[in-house]
Image (cartoon, rainbow, N blue to C red):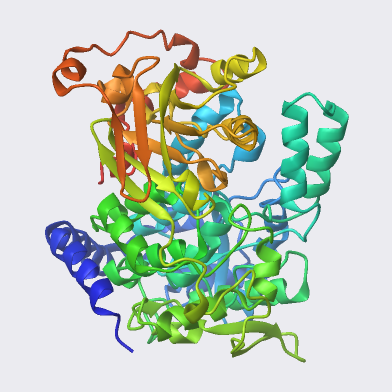
Length: 607
């Protein structure tokens, strides 16, 4: 089935815009494939270093360049729940490789930080830039040129985008992404959110808050709400980088282990040494990127991907824009209600039919490109399945259920929750911004109120505690962009603004910072570009200026004349406090080189 005409038109305009950069990229893949995609170019000394710890038989195999060698790039650490399961994956992958006559080596590790740990802390200012560090670390691991394919072990916010940028930089190699899966369900997310609000209002203490948080985040695996981490897993599957049905199987289960072994074997089956060579740089094309954006909208995914998708696409020579993302949102209905867009978590989504059901519904409606290449082979239709454990301990697959197991969580196309995906671009005299409306009630999507201008999350928190915010207002939080302080998530604002909204006030947020996949029920114009530090109009807004945020019509304006706004100067601000401590000294170069949010906020300058 071919994609619908509007989806095809957007894809074609991306293709035309990207023609020159894509041709350069593909040319580099061709050159790398013919010149350096095997160990034959390595000297004997190079090889001796590369397989020094291998067994005698493995040394013979690697020296002859006839046996495929699989590189493992891992984000394992045992502090973070999402990445702790990866501890055992390399041994499983190595054993699976031996079973099919291949070899696997851990090529390198990449850092994995958790936004949940660093929310509101200085370390959050490293978070966005960690994506580029991860890409660089993956490149270092693969630079030894010992590998015929690679598998990438990653889950969370910046890790998967960074790994994919790294993989696409080595686009001549096949790449398979292997997830660890979500933790089992704990305290429901909405109950946890209620305790957070009570704590912010001083009605419960720290002990009660910590108990609630611990019952929610309670074991190995990804956090169960639908933020950036779980949006990553959806993207990798719908873009064909996972094996079918792999995304949302819990860690530590026989099925998860079987999927891991299968993924390793599949990576070895698609190297240049066989007949199904699938280099990731050719596999991921404009159609794959569009499929990822459609999946993001259909599931109500993270706003962070309005930045990451641009950077990932750019790594493959593809020029994606916010306008493309916004137009695809208008064309894509919302089919999933997972917290914060609903009360259920990703385990409930998976049990209701999961990605297999969703992919089939989108394919049948013509909203996805079916004629793509994936790590599984030709076409996306094989992903409209449910993975199960066979009697022999291997993975089997069945067609996704025809009916949703819970239409309050996962709707068929004919009963979509809303006609668009809920991610929209805003434009006006403040600049360009992104807003996520899928969790915002329709009556709250238009806010016109006086500005309260602040330069940090803490300043808003202090004003709230002082009782200065019990009124209608638009919080303008500036100097939070990539070049100012690394564009941290401002997730702590959600609770405070949510309390004020629940008290009946009309409130909204406008910021050049980020809010993540948990932006929630308060209208938030985020990623405002150009940022204040670059002289953007957001830095010229004054207390009391009337700001109008209209999510339905896609406008973001301050009611100040063009002449006055032009005459105003962005105030000077002392950012030296953001330049040191918690490793921030080491990222001065990243802040200086960072691109704009609407260009992927990358230090690489690829977009």
